[in-house]
Length: 171
Image (tube, rainbow, N blue to C red):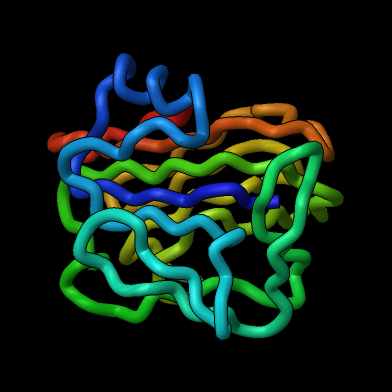
């Protein structure tokens, strides 16, 4: 399940990440580009609750469901949410990608959480679960991998930042 996915145009500090990790309903804060909650899915769209980015469009099978007592979206490989290209989501320099996830079965090749890169490139930003139940951040200036040992059905807060020097960090 995916409860929330958020993107910022700045690298949040560890204290800000900790605040977001305390609750999926924590307020977004300054520099937010978008906050999408797949449980808000209506008529094939998930509105952006914060920031200038447009709504996300459901492509393929995306369902609003409940997982372990939380309303969320189920993205089981048969569909995804797509935010149109545009200046609001074309991040250069600092960035933060953040989500609350409860993965189900994830294949060894992983699953994308937030991806705004051309296929097979590092020309944007990607936070995924490669390999398997690990976490990976890919941006043009860095690739960071952490053996997060995500557990199926367990809610986890995940976040990645890229600072002004191009250094990536996973939380």
